[in-house]
Length: 604
Ligand SMILES: Cc1ncc(C[n+]2csc(CCOP(=O)(O)OP(=O)(O)O)c2C)c(N)n1
Ligand SMILES: [Mg+2]
Image (cartoon, helix red, strand yellow):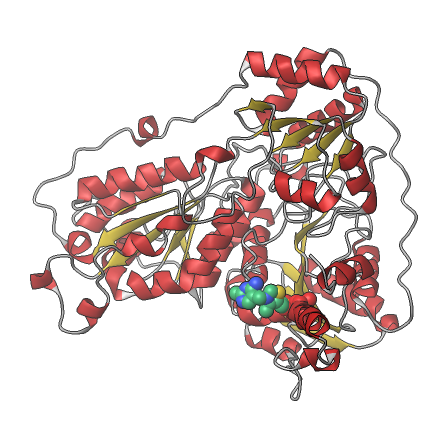
């Protein structure tokens, strides 16, 4: 791991390979040093992408490529990370990208593996995270197909399964075309707006013996680093607006994990005196205990202070905010403010997925990434003022003595103390007021697409990227989320990726209990029935045993507030010793009062 990760990931740095991981799954030397088959050429291109790992679940459609990675590349750069489900393979690549900003690889078998992978690909797409997904089809040439199995695993247009939520896909017809496709897939995935790409390698092409040696190319020249610049005229207009603003607001949205860029955002907010709003859907973008931060960060529900700041704002600067129109609606509207949008996201929008959200009013658009626009705005606005002193947030005191998610969060925060910690995932029940974020890696954001089950895999991928950085990776998952993605933990256990997962176990798909309550209220039917078809009990599931079954260390169930501290201390010690630790905390069902009020309201 590069030392810069300790201070903030430079978006252009790649973690170096972890020697404990690279010592695993070593093949006997195959003595192969020249490409002989179609898939060897694709493997060469994969190596040129400079990705350390490819998370996969195997399948005959890509047995050619599988052999090339093991016996031609020697299972390094990329090294295979075996996963028990395609959804976790893709989620691991997603989590890795959340930390590094860079694409990892994932490989999934034919149409069926890709079908398993779809939800995780959608999550990564909505989260604008890069990854290169390699897939395969049975032989396109029907003459080469094995009876039955190759026929069911061959589809006319396999990429169509994921085309609505990938940036680009291809099915190259020759080894040289496959090389080009893999390079293009890496280049497009890593270029903003980032996202998953998919290359479908014909089994026949992979297994074809090369008639002649393929002439080498200088692969890096085919993947130029794309640096976009902030258009000067638009920066000047935005700076004029901000300079004249009396109540400026910054919506700090999708930004990098870079610490310099973080500090520049703080400088900009301080220079213009803007209130800043952040969002739990995405990674930390601004210190949440800074005096200019408006209220606690929220997800679907805005803190009252944030809503008030937005309503009162005269100039609102969005740094690639996920949903300007929806946020305005939630805040109660603002018909007079001028909007400045900094984003390249519009380049990605398509007709399949509406994750682009409502069309917002925009008076000035700076068509580049926020990390590029903010220094340009600072330069246009003149020297920054001295830094403000951070506010002291009063310690949060959970109400009552029944164990709630708030008790869990307070005790967990106390248990990690002052050490650098990355929250790799949070539960739907999370209360943003408890845990302040002071560094871009303190919080990595949500699953992107609202696909439950991503939490464990995303956290394994993030922990992989953080390994050796000195940061403690900690995930808080709902029990529903954990149960859907639990087998991702085996991959973490096998490859010695330390990680702490705390399960906020309310023994329910509780979010949907609130939906049923709302429907019952609207229809004047008994709300007491909201739990039916939602509760995960009788029998209660032994989550610690499920963790142990994957090779992790399982703790709990913790059922009393006074047992939290000692259990978290033991679990963190296990993570420090290199283990995956899972703590099952039995929490009372329930969300924070404002969230419950909004979810169960009877009017729109
Ligand atoms: C793949 C998928 N299935 C179903 C849903 C609908 N859904 C949204 S939240 C939720 C409950 C999740 O349960 P859990 O992780 O335990 O969190 P809790 O609501 O209990 O806090 C469900 C089923 C979804 N978003 N994604
Ligand atoms: Mg639950």
